[in-house]
Image (cartoon, one colour):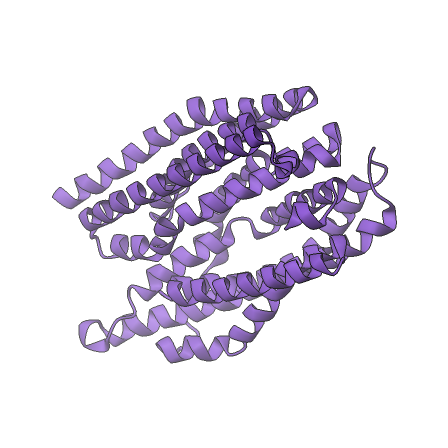
Length: 416
């Protein structure tokens, strides 16, 4: 629908918007992932009172409510700061770019988009808390609903000629659906676990969250330079048309990765709960089965996309002029399969409430940043090929070494 209703330049703006908006990583700082893990750990100890002491149960309930308050304050400040900084960064980037559209054509959509995304950022920890409580299915359902409605509204907006204003459709419906579903958030938590009996059991940000957060934050910030630098660089070096072709291709493979990783992501709270109960053998068995399913799914979907693009170019489909070449898509497909392996292993290791990927992420970010900055002016294909080489020959082997250490450690603990 995007290539059909947007011209090539508008398509470039559409996907470059998304890449710049990814700087919300600098404001979230990986905290949602920590929230899921910490909530899962406390929920694992909130069991029926006949199987655990009342004091332990009330302690976990108190800590859970303390975490909710801490996270609410953090994300309130983060959302406001994000609005101002991201708006200014986008305006500075798009001004006076060669081949750009008129200032008035993108300024309004950009500022409104940033505000809606900031509101979603403020809501996101509540969804993470419910996921940590085991409500993965319900959260997935509401995300399916809001995504479906958002895309329908996007298509309608494109069809009636709203142009770049259509970019707001999906995050806007996400905000509306999430707000409606979370309107009784506090009541949902109290119905699940009850009210805390006292305020003695507090979570310390400095002692319990920050030691893990700063490591994950650096990894996630590194992720911005690893995954979201390509489209803005293509926009800056090769113009909005080439950025649009690359952006839509990256979006296709990001969707494939999201679908493929759904098996592992859905069981993230279970990994933490199994570790909390010391059931490490069960954890390894569960992960291996999920890992195989995810990688097979990603591999199959990536292969189908590459074959379809090759066929489309061979028969002369006009649509092929609006996406990257089959060669670039083949590079992206191979990279997506490798990244799926890395993501899955990272989730397994982080379930231990540790961040073993810190140094690896920083090194890969530096390598990717340097490689794409050097190669971007020589074309998109060389830029993405350099990225693939780093993922295949450095990132994946490094992750395998780290993963092997954690999986062996779990087996060792289980035998003891």
